[in-house]
Image (cartoon, rainbow, N blue to C red):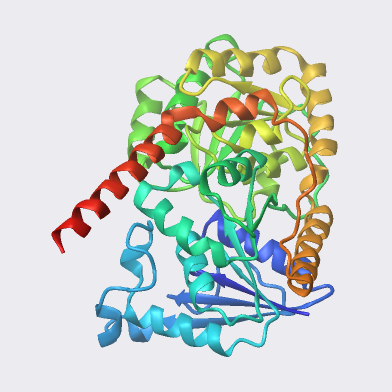
Length: 426
């Protein structure tokens, strides 16, 4: 079977690119796999690509940035999508041509705008699978309206958490579309797991406001005050670097907290630590959390929507603390800093529990979804997801957070009213 991924830019850096490459590599053991990259801006991808996986760019920005069609706005790619300004009539054309000519049995879109292309332009014989790497509630109402209309032509929609899958089923009403959670996979580690003896807390990710490294640094100041022999290492780069460096200096942590720059792969850095930390306000999945756990580190994380709470078992293989609370973060870190045996035991448990995000179980789930979608096409019936029983209380809480259900309802009423007014003006 041939499987094709439709990706924004395979030559960039980001969690969606990494997890797409991981799944493509795993599928290549039993299938013909290609990645179609809408954009290209450099000679080679940043991430290593399995030679069995072919890579085909559609628009090469090194030569086509000033192409007349690329200077015109896109008409298929949705206006409300975050990446809209990077798309154009040229990308509309090339994506449409690629989908029309594809010989793949299965095409997988990897972001909302590309899922819209897939739903509207893929041939009828193709199994269309859309992936959601953010969350439904993260999208503006205008985009959700577009997705609600377009996604009805998909066969399968996958999310990275059960909470987001439940939100899609409840809010979007997509008859005939199989909506399932398919977590991201993390490759098997090649280095021995951390032994929990190093007095180092490790964090990694883009240095951007939503990641709240400022909160982590403030929390670590409390750790350092009680245990001055511990260190904090933050890996990544981004717009917050100068501000974070200034914060470190102002708190007197110049010799205890360090901005290490970007590191890829991170495995060699995770195993040098004993605790990992994430202070994000929003984490659709949490690739770095899984990476750290697979390397033997218990993770102290905010319980933000939606990923951390579905990855970490609080008090078993890590700790979950309220969003935006530096004191709670500091207290959880100190619990592990003070108790060597508990820290090491949680690290060993983290390795075992994170095994469910290894390539093999995720691959098996992906293949099952594909096979069931193909069977459903043959019978003319949509695939039926198994009954999972009641949604856990913690997930129920996150589903109603931030009042998105109310806002969606209000937006729908306003849209109907506007259509009525327009009809009366004709």
